[in-house]
Length: 316
Image 1 (cartoon, rainbow, N blue to C red):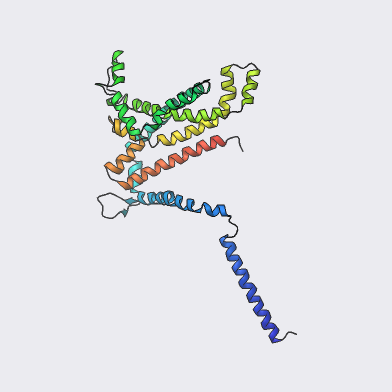
Image 2: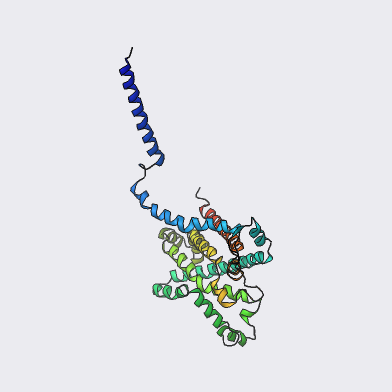
């Protein structure tokens, strides 16, 4: 039989153990102890990323449900009005249609020319660095300068390309005709960004293992057979990465169109990026522009997901 003093001492001991266990559980809940130093070192980067990415994204969603005209004193909630305004607009779907044409034709040309030039540079015995440097010049040109250059070269009065076409009997205002304006803008983008495809594919070619190529050569395979059976399968994922980068970039193609055609003639070059800029800054309807921007974001995420699925296909 325990005495009252022993019961009191046992009670104090239990309370002390309870407080200790509670303190330990709280630390475990925060997981403070298990994080290593490197985890704490990336914390500032995560905070900055949240500030510059997550907050603007949430604000974009908020704006897409608000009456956010510049003429309004305060933005007011208007439900799905902005989304309805965007999604039932024929110009919205027509702009996506032109963007699709732009992306398919532009990417196809850029990949064909870029891969071809990369293979040619890869086979060069000497002077490879000089050729790569010269080929890269269009990338360093600002999009606005590229647009001004294209506008100058395609001018129907004094432009070089218009003059060359006139020599073969084609007299047309290239940027002023609905049949040729979009093609001209696509070719400007191809001229400016094909070198990027070349650089990415060339990097992939230079990292190829030598053994499969040497084995194919010993087996008597000619250049085309080595290209189709060995080189392309090995660099296919590199080409997909280049396509992913360019496809997402094409959705934001605005600068050159702004300088050359202003979306015309008759909206023939009004792609989705230019239409977004027009809704935001010309019509100053920021709520509808936010909804439109979110559709572009969803399209970009969907596109990126498809590329990633394709690249990881077969790894699982």
